[in-house]
Length: 326
Image (cartoon, rainbow, N blue to C red; front, side, top):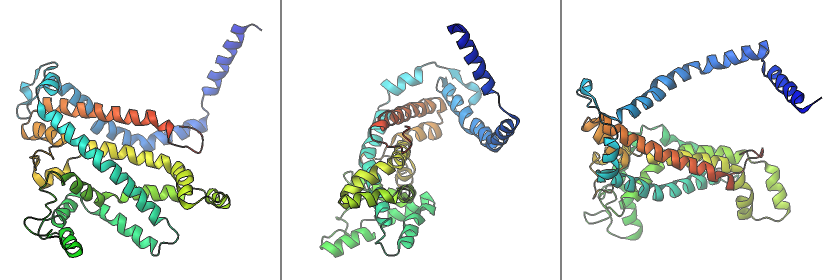
């Protein structure tokens, strides 16, 4: 039998194996039936609007007079890159805040999950509930609560600092968390702790899935608790850490609600809170320039996609999968 005949028979066998049985076809129909509504919703409310916004980015499109839309080609993109300093200000503010908030939020969520997973912690279930409960509070309500907590004169954080250290923190000249450009990103990071419960929950679930026999073997070998944490815990839960990292990066790229609720999107203090999505909102819904706003949104999408792709490309260096696949 020659080589070409073997190839033809192999391809024919592959085609025969690709044919589904009745049971497999029935299972496939049920599967598509269950995800059918989701697919319809995805195409109707996500995919089609994304394509429409891409088209709008090449049009001079006014929301008040949509019938007068005109094609302007790359004019919006030229303005975006070369004529609008607010775009680069928004990106700089967004990335600066992300560089501060991301490591603090990730480390805090992981630390609290390890603490809540400890067998020596009394009342673990109560603490788990307390840490997760704030995520059930609406975001805007949580921001308004924190604006009171961080109030320079009546907020309990300044009052506690004054009580503990004697420093006159709760006075008109005290610590102004939301008015000082040097403290504003730390203040926003503190507000972000209000919704840290989801990341804690994911990490806690991953910690409880680490095989106990690995810890027992490490103890027999004389490994200390920090060594077990570094050599067993972190590698075993690295897929969840990676998952939280992806969600955090995407969420920080879309940071909007906190600065808008607290300052109306005016960038106070000193332009330090003029995030990229604030600029998108102002151009699109305040100035009603949907064409230029769509270009701003697509630039953010490309940046977020590039960052996500970079994280996935480097994940093979530090993310461990028990099955050996990455």
